[in-house]
Amino acid sequence: MSVYLGLDTSNYTTSVCLYDSENGSVISKRKLLPVREGELGLRQSDAVFHHVQQLPGLFEEAFAEYAGDIRAIGVSSRPRAVDGSYMPCFTVGLTAARVLSQSMRVPFYTFSHQQGHIAAALYSIGRLDLIDQPHIAFHVSGGTTEALAVNTDGGFLDTRLIAKTLDLNAGQLIDRTGVMLGVPFPCGKELEKLALCCDERIKPKVTLKGADCCLSGGENMAKKLMDEGKSPAYIARFIIEFICGAVEKMSERIREEFGDLPFVYAGGVMSDSIIRERLTARSDCLFALPEYSCDNAAGIAVLASIKDNV
Image 1: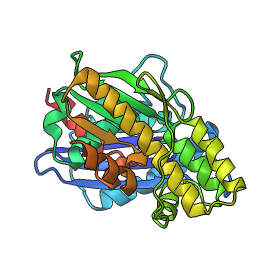
Image 2: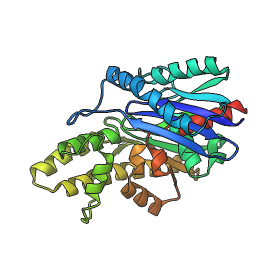
Image 3: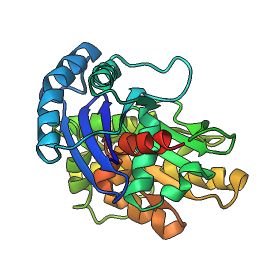
């Protein structure tokens, strides 16, 4: 018996995953939380409600494909592995994991949502050897824009914050711009499609303080470009290039301090093809496959298998 169950109930996605540690296969099921047209997100009370509604259906889908035993359960219990990190939506997955652990008589292990992203990225590119090796991990999404030193201070998947956004997260900037352009929320994929329609060379000015970035200026520039009559494709391209420039400069400054450690990029924003192409052209780096960049429970299931065998 080598199958592990992973659960993740993040702010915008309900996720269930079954991971077979013997052959490396996964059964991954996930569903976005519904957001009303024109709105920029969900209240936590609404997110909790939708997770409760969606989780049973995802269990049904996953276990329709696998009817065997589960060795252990992994669950994301908080956004980040730091004191005080908390969001109510994660209690839905945590409660389900506790109930299943008792009923199945198997252990359950808790991890942060961010650790799940790192593990999913490494799993997707066949680099689980880095799970206990020093590396730099970027987690860039709607809720987080951070660079982490991983396994540099000891401990299992130990993470230390080394750079961050000082205002807006990258995903927030994408969603605010997308809604402004009439794109449905969440806006990442549609904004990318718009941006790919623009062939103009755009080099936005990016501001850093140390290795930290400031992204709110991008929103102001997007509004200014709209007032000037620039096309939606141009504005979309500007915003993606703006975010890419920030991540690129952050990476350069971090590399000056940490040297040639592997750089791993995860989170929904890092699935953007323009950003991936630009960063990989300039330096050796590792990107989660797009389907494992967005919120998912695969990394949590993988971590459960590793923790269970420590």
